[in-house]
Length: 278
Image (cartoon, rainbow, N blue to C red; front, side, top):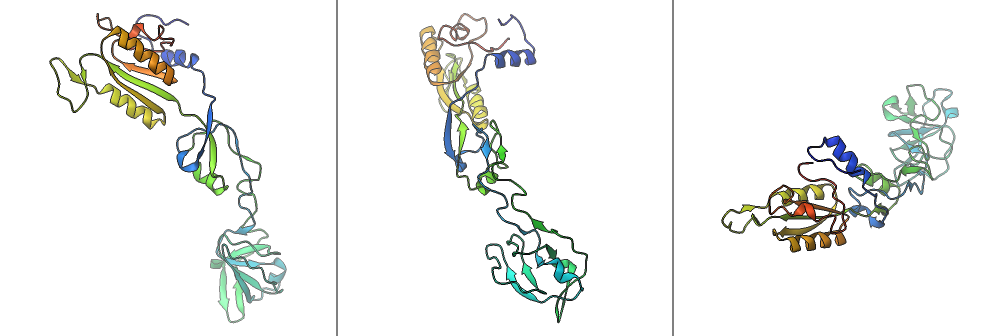
């Protein structure tokens, strides 16, 4: 589709640009700390169950329902902590003191939070009804082994990356960063920090574009300021096209006698997507 002369609605410009874009398919594998703002190249599948074992969701007491039938207080036979499970024999008619995250002892039917208990000389008395399975997080309840955690094309942020860490995943395959070459054109431009000559202004557009691209997570190739010289402009476009997936230039697209930029993208083998005035 050819571009029409004159002004163009934003939606039309975006649609025509997207029609001409080919998605990247090159990938690379990076550690989690370098994966922020990157995009997953493939579905990420969980290598394990989360949680990896039945565990207590509350601080309280692990119990067997049969031991609660007569309503008697139960002595505490041991303790279970996160990282320190109770592995001893569990006598009948007793309970196990358990902390949040600790594996539940074998045979445990429920966990009773401590707020629903009373301490007595005979042991722990349970003052609220107890249901089978209460306050127990079952193995694989959050994420099952083999489940797709994040599909291909997912941006990785502070929400997703800790999840991958919780699965023991240290590296992730992501789509290669988009490489964008940026340059400004015009004899009137000067770098900040340098003295201005007659009729010159400081180059600010390139800085703004560079920062926006960095914020989006792209790899920026900054080619500086190109003078109003047709040969140097052509060389700049060829150089940029060889290094980058996208080329953004600022300046030289109006109808002035020194506005050469608009003539060179196609000559350099590129495809002009949008220019000022479209």
